[in-house]
Image (tube, rainbow, N blue to C red; front, side, top):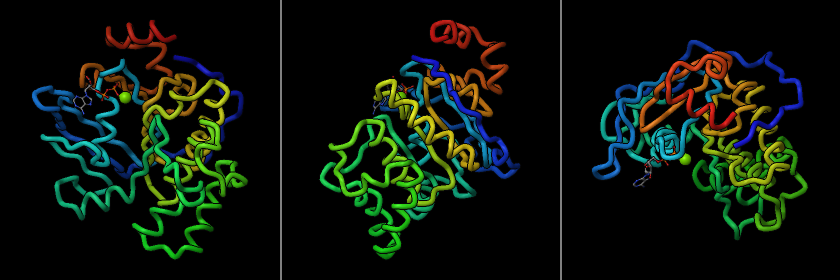
Length: 261
Ligand code: ADP
Ligand code: MG
């Protein structure tokens, strides 16, 4: 784990937390077979929040964020995203997935498609966006993540950091209102971590609602408005970063912080 210094001024002028609810999770429980992996999760995320989810390996962080766009199914309680309840109703699942972008530790790009094709595939085939328009949007976001010159290459020709930025651009092409990140920098070499964090910081600066599972505590301190600590399938503590790091209340949080900081 690392605490990378973020050596830039962060523009907070557009980082407003609104009183509009983006995600509402109440009494949510999930089991993998007999294993009770998430217990009584209650979490309200407001538009514009930048939430970092921390906690030991196996505590359920990935499962929690994967439940939000139905990559995993919960069995009890409610998840409501932008007013739509996640149920087995495919219409609702589609609507929620159209509003929620996701970025994983392993970038999951299609190796046989170019960078541009990776970015236009879903807009063309899922959204029925005309190809030309999809390509213009893709180039816009590739410029945003600072790799427009890679558009015609294949994922295997790019560095890990570049591939992760493509994965972020690809998500943005679907114009999500919420972005979920699951350890987006964990598979990267240190010099590439920074370029991906920079991209995430820019998204935050534009007011994107973000839930990030990450061990980058520098990012948590400087970008998050709230840090959530999970252990054994529960949210055991949450606070604004300053309080979370300087004045943790729960013994498990204290132990975790003493090990990583
Ligand atoms: P984290 O992201 O915090 O490391 P995960 O959400 O990946 O935690 O996993 C939480 C627990 O659920 C772990 O004990 C893990 O082994 C278990 N788990 C994760 N995925 C599955 C699965 N598909 N089937 C069974 N158990 C799983
Ligand atoms: Mg995980």
